[in-house]
Image (cartoon, rainbow, N blue to C red; front, side, top):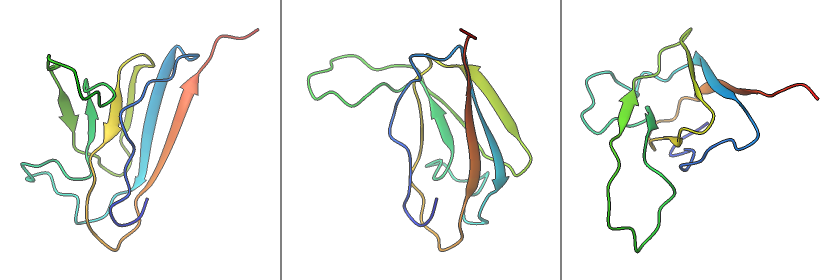
Length: 98
């Protein structure tokens, strides 16, 4: 991902388990950022204008060499960030055989 790139909230319907491994994280994605720019966030579903409820969320600071595993049915996204450095992450799913 490059400047302002991000993933919108989504799930992986056909998988059992999902994960993300951060290979390279730009210095502009900081642990002390209260807005969590560039972090991975869980819990917020697809944007829906008529939704009247909120969901509890949790954001995790990405760190090079860190792997995060989570149920594939957890809504997750990345928070947009600014910066010229490229972020490199490997996302994956675990599927049932057959």
